[in-house]
Length: 278
Image (cartoon, rainbow, N blue to C red):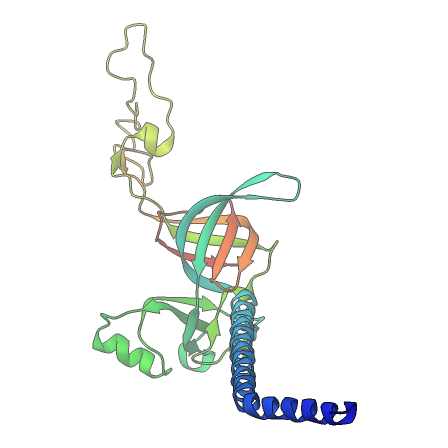
């Protein structure tokens, strides 16, 4: 056998081997290719889901962090709210300020009074839904298409045309650095003597004095006028009256949570109703 015939036989043997093994190898190659494509597709789907979840989370965070850009009624300068409690706020220099946290609003305009009908111009606002409202209160708020409110207060205004029935008033009507007045009902302390109620100094505790240390002393002449003048400072019920604290500075306004941070103390206990106005 010459070299040429030998080469031909070797080529034939290789072709036969290739024909015998090619179907299995081709099938294995096809299977591995399909698995690779499936893995790549599943990886792309997982990546797409993670990206969409991250985008949704970013949108949610942006919505929660960014304050709602509502229209501000510049003519409104009053709100109702409740006292949350006291805390401290520090400025850039590290100075501490005692601060009262007030949840102010949202309030809704429930009635507008005019000179023609009522003799004066004023705006009535309501605060907090009243689930136990009686029929007269429900009908009153029905005129302004509002749910009945638990607390109602009225404020005089210069121009009633700046307000509309059903309008919402929020803390964005105030700005940081503004000076406001806060009214509330002071804490009731029961029956108290003149030293606690009016700040009297009391009587002497020596030189023969007995049981007069916290007494009010003389309350007036006997013969003339023979009575106690009206308004005389005497023992009586202390607290539980309307008190207005003027000239308080707004340190911070939280529009998202309807909170006002006011420098100093305000009248009343926690959860007590407050009126904030400038």
